[in-house]
Image (cartoon, helix red, strand yellow):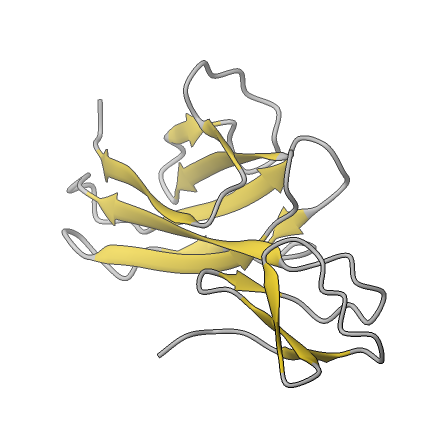
Length: 142
Protein backbone atom coordinates (compact mmCIF):
# COMPACT_ATOMS: atom_id res chain seq x y z
CA UNK A 1 0.00 0.00 0.00
CA UNK A 2 1.36 3.41 -0.83
CA UNK A 3 0.20 6.81 0.19
CA UNK A 4 -0.12 9.43 -2.46
CA UNK A 5 -2.36 11.60 -4.43
CA UNK A 6 -2.88 12.20 -8.11
CA UNK A 7 -1.71 15.53 -9.48
CA UNK A 8 -3.37 16.28 -12.83
CA UNK A 9 -1.64 18.88 -14.96
CA UNK A 10 -2.12 19.79 -18.58
CA UNK A 11 1.50 19.59 -19.73
CA UNK A 12 2.45 16.73 -17.37
CA UNK A 13 5.61 18.42 -16.11
CA UNK A 14 5.79 16.96 -12.63
CA UNK A 15 7.74 18.47 -9.78
CA UNK A 16 10.27 16.83 -7.45
CA UNK A 17 9.42 13.37 -6.12
CA UNK A 18 6.61 13.00 -8.64
CA UNK A 19 6.36 11.18 -11.95
CA UNK A 20 4.14 11.38 -15.02
CA UNK A 21 1.86 8.49 -15.93
CA UNK A 22 -0.58 8.95 -18.79
CA UNK A 23 -0.82 12.70 -18.39
CA UNK A 24 -1.11 12.81 -14.60
CA UNK A 25 1.48 13.36 -11.90
CA UNK A 26 1.80 10.84 -9.06
CA UNK A 27 3.88 11.05 -5.92
CA UNK A 28 6.68 8.55 -5.49
CA UNK A 29 6.47 6.07 -2.60
CA UNK A 30 7.10 7.83 0.70
CA UNK A 31 5.84 11.19 -0.58
CA UNK A 32 2.46 12.89 -0.78
CA UNK A 33 1.06 16.14 -2.06
CA UNK A 34 -1.59 17.99 -3.94
CA UNK A 35 0.02 20.82 -5.88
CA UNK A 36 -1.33 21.58 -9.36
CA UNK A 37 1.55 23.99 -10.08
CA UNK A 38 4.21 21.28 -10.39
CA UNK A 39 6.05 22.04 -7.17
CA UNK A 40 6.18 18.33 -6.45
CA UNK A 41 5.49 16.11 -3.50
CA UNK A 42 6.54 16.41 0.13
CA UNK A 43 8.18 13.72 2.28
CA UNK A 44 6.13 11.55 4.61
CA UNK A 45 8.06 11.13 7.86
CA UNK A 46 7.08 8.66 10.58
CA UNK A 47 8.09 9.02 14.23
CA UNK A 48 8.13 6.13 16.72
CA UNK A 49 8.06 6.82 20.49
CA UNK A 50 8.07 4.18 23.25
CA UNK A 51 7.04 4.93 26.84
CA UNK A 52 9.57 3.12 29.04
CA UNK A 53 9.01 5.09 32.26
CA UNK A 54 6.99 3.05 34.76
CA UNK A 55 5.68 6.10 36.63
CA UNK A 56 2.00 5.44 35.98
CA UNK A 57 1.57 8.36 33.58
CA UNK A 58 1.32 8.71 29.83
CA UNK A 59 3.74 10.66 27.68
CA UNK A 60 2.32 13.56 25.67
CA UNK A 61 4.42 14.59 22.69
CA UNK A 62 4.56 16.99 19.75
CA UNK A 63 6.70 17.67 16.70
CA UNK A 64 7.85 21.16 15.74
CA UNK A 65 9.19 22.67 12.52
CA UNK A 66 12.29 24.76 13.11
CA UNK A 67 11.73 26.73 9.90
CA UNK A 68 8.08 27.74 10.12
CA UNK A 69 5.40 28.24 12.72
CA UNK A 70 4.08 24.68 12.46
CA UNK A 71 3.43 21.80 14.87
CA UNK A 72 2.12 18.25 14.63
CA UNK A 73 -0.53 17.85 15.80
CA UNK A 74 -1.67 21.43 15.34
CA UNK A 75 -2.62 23.93 18.02
CA UNK A 76 -2.89 22.70 21.60
CA UNK A 77 -3.46 19.06 20.57
CA UNK A 78 -0.84 16.45 21.59
CA UNK A 79 -0.02 12.89 20.68
CA UNK A 80 -0.08 10.45 23.62
CA UNK A 81 1.74 7.17 24.01
CA UNK A 82 -0.62 4.17 24.23
CA UNK A 83 0.92 2.86 27.46
CA UNK A 84 4.04 1.49 29.09
CA UNK A 85 6.15 -0.51 26.63
CA UNK A 86 3.97 0.29 23.62
CA UNK A 87 5.05 2.22 20.55
CA UNK A 88 3.31 5.39 19.48
CA UNK A 89 3.63 5.98 15.73
CA UNK A 90 2.68 9.15 13.88
CA UNK A 91 3.27 10.09 10.25
CA UNK A 92 3.57 13.71 9.18
CA UNK A 93 3.91 15.55 5.90
CA UNK A 94 6.89 17.93 6.14
CA UNK A 95 8.78 20.21 3.77
CA UNK A 96 12.19 19.51 2.25
CA UNK A 97 15.02 21.45 3.97
CA UNK A 98 13.22 21.89 7.29
CA UNK A 99 14.17 20.18 10.52
CA UNK A 100 11.57 18.49 12.72
CA UNK A 101 12.13 18.68 16.48
CA UNK A 102 10.68 16.29 19.07
CA UNK A 103 9.34 17.36 22.45
CA UNK A 104 7.47 15.44 25.16
CA UNK A 105 6.33 15.54 28.76
CA UNK A 106 4.82 13.03 31.17
CA UNK A 107 1.78 13.69 33.33
CA UNK A 108 4.20 13.73 36.28
CA UNK A 109 6.31 16.53 34.73
CA UNK A 110 9.33 14.79 33.15
CA UNK A 111 10.35 16.49 29.89
CA UNK A 112 12.12 15.13 26.81
CA UNK A 113 13.66 16.86 23.80
CA UNK A 114 12.44 20.42 23.36
CA UNK A 115 9.45 19.90 25.69
CA UNK A 116 5.80 20.42 24.81
CA UNK A 117 6.29 24.15 24.28
CA UNK A 118 9.51 24.03 22.16
CA UNK A 119 11.33 25.90 24.95
CA UNK A 120 13.88 23.32 26.15
CA UNK A 121 17.31 22.99 24.61
CA UNK A 122 18.55 19.71 23.16
CA UNK A 123 21.43 18.56 21.00
CA UNK A 124 19.97 15.49 19.33
CA UNK A 125 16.18 15.82 19.08
CA UNK A 126 15.81 17.47 15.63
CA UNK A 127 15.84 15.56 12.33
CA UNK A 128 15.95 16.63 8.69
CA UNK A 129 12.67 16.21 6.84
CA UNK A 130 13.07 13.06 4.75
CA UNK A 131 10.90 10.18 3.64
CA UNK A 132 11.82 7.77 6.46
CA UNK A 133 10.98 6.49 9.93
CA UNK A 134 12.68 8.01 12.97
CA UNK A 135 12.79 5.79 16.04
CA UNK A 136 13.05 8.15 19.02
CA UNK A 137 13.74 5.18 21.27
CA UNK A 138 12.61 4.45 24.78
CA UNK A 139 11.59 7.39 26.96
CA UNK A 140 12.90 6.44 30.41
CA UNK A 141 12.43 8.02 33.82
CA UNK A 142 16.09 9.12 33.99
